[in-house]
Image (spheres, rainbow, N blue to C red):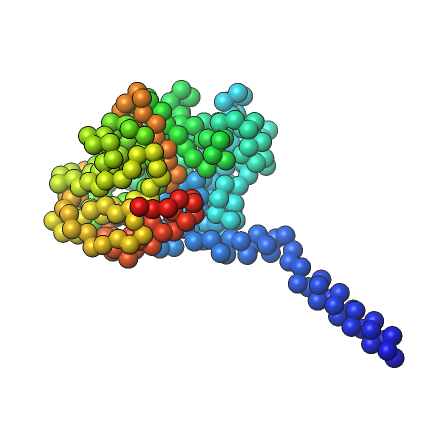
Length: 314
């Protein structure tokens, strides 16, 4: 009887060990479930990123983040989001590269970025067209940096090196607009990390003073002082005469500046620079029209973004 009890007890232990060891698929779902993106904090109209917009995007695991080019073979592949919210495997390739890690596809060196996809897939540009930003000229494509584990997009010293939508976006009225960007500038004259409507509705880094970043509307632009050669998560609100401004901390105060809302159509653009000695690094950006982020929302976005990418806000 004692032997039987020992056997049963051992069986219970074994059974418990078996049922508490999760399957791989369950682990992936659990990881995806823990992910929080900026789209879980406020609702965007357009968002580009080297990570998932939201928990739902991460959990689905089907959204392409970017289309990249192997600089040796010129093969193009989409990069799907992983269920952890980061960069997953290659898909939809022009050659045989599907199903690889980005490092394997790129050969452990820099790839080039052909397209950043608007992850909302809402055809938010004018006449219900896509807002994906694209660069088809190989020499003008930003680099997806191998030394940064393919988690950083780098643009260097070329005014044509940028990603731009084929279609216009329009805010459409005098409603407020919230913009976000995660980037690093290194002394450039002008670097547009996100521009929703051409040169309007933008967060830029400028060098009138080397540490200056600027929120650009159609007038009454506002600035903030932030260190060069450092990563920043920035939230900007364009809201006319009241509650406009920039914040890059995790304890944003009420906005006190003014910035006029853009009201003409223009092509969304990422990573525009205008200095041959410039280096611009980028990770994500987007905007929400008809929404003025509160100080609490801006703080939450900067906290979420800086924690994900692993840097400390000012």
